[in-house]
Length: 191
Image: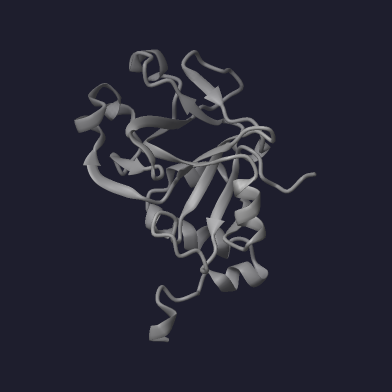
């Protein structure tokens, strides 16, 4: 069954999702296995921690803001990175997300690889502490309950200069009812 949940798609939190880890979040799915789990990174949660404090060798390659992003509530002591690679080659130390063709040139970076190996290959890089994860069937259940919209990604979503606007901007570009959802107040009780 094609439910749209594939690597390279976005999970956009609906206004009903109250979990503080995911409130108004935009998650890029980086892995999805029907008989396994799903892994993603929250794209719009920059921290105040500069990348050079955590991964100094990679700090020169990071696309602004050059801070670590909180990728999700799981394994906050580990890091992963997303990078955009132009062209058609698959450089050593980089793996395409697969799934959605819209983000075919966005992939995961092996942070154990020497940065100089990829320095000339990458046009954009972002580092995340932690990730979001779902067990078998868990994400499908959350989507069915109305917690998430599953939407197409654009290559620039993972590297937006103003990540706090991403939730609004992704919903706006959908048009129709979802564009209207983008105007949903942060606190409806103040309306």
